[in-house]
Length: 116
Length: 113
Image (cartoon, rainbow over all chains, first blue to last red; front, top):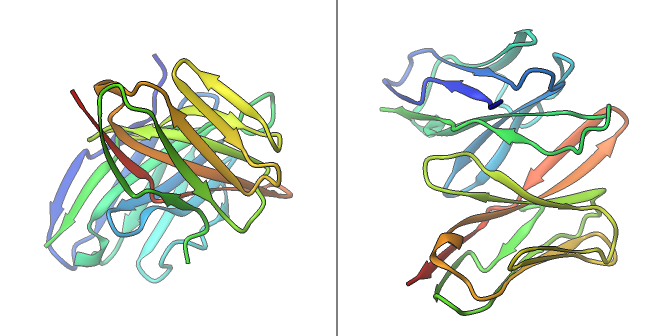
């Protein structure tokens, strides 16, 4: 049963600490998205990769956030230093563009981040 | 300004009632997707509509894409408690190899038994 796997599921940290969230996309998918979900803003796009290349990270605060795909099986989202306003649920999603793909996104279960 | 406006934001109804939720934008989309999200989980795709005016049915759910591909609606007939969840619409825009899927804030539906 193919699915997107995210770690950690829950993270509580103190302001100023570094946070790294990891995502294993579905094997064979060529796109990876990072979204942040809050009650106030809903789902906000942070970064988008296609074939491991970053295509759009315009939604990401550049001074403290960074997103990478070191290989096809791992995507990372790093926050350094973290701030209380970063508290949210962070979702990774993968999909298949082209090659007969439908554009559907498959989401992980999310990483709930609380910054005190 | 939200690219996609969903209404209503909250909806609480009794089992057996019908309902419609809306997704509106001033932008044109190449396709529009509807997702449902349950607590503690990620959104799950319900349907994708591509053609202006397109209507798709999924059991008791009817999805419509506006003629101008700027808006969409989801109608649920005879709602059941299992329909409870956050319904999200997402508009797709493609520019070359860049592909952006933008979500509305969602409609939180509660169906009471």
